Length: 66
Image (cartoon, rainbow, N blue to C red; front, side, top):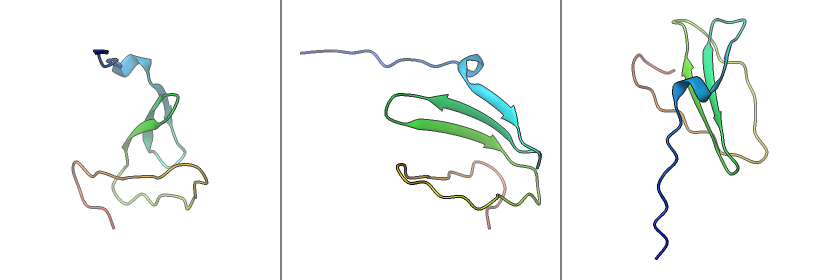
């Protein structure tokens, strides 16, 4: 039986940027998926976009999403 240990990725390994609208994003990029953590300022509007090859899931930890 192959017992692989999960890879632990630290915050400082993310690709980080601050967008013009004030949103702060950390990108964790892997071969088959991506994880993005966002801090979105109150009142900010996310620009419309679409994805051809991935599904996007949003989890709100604090605040309200409209």
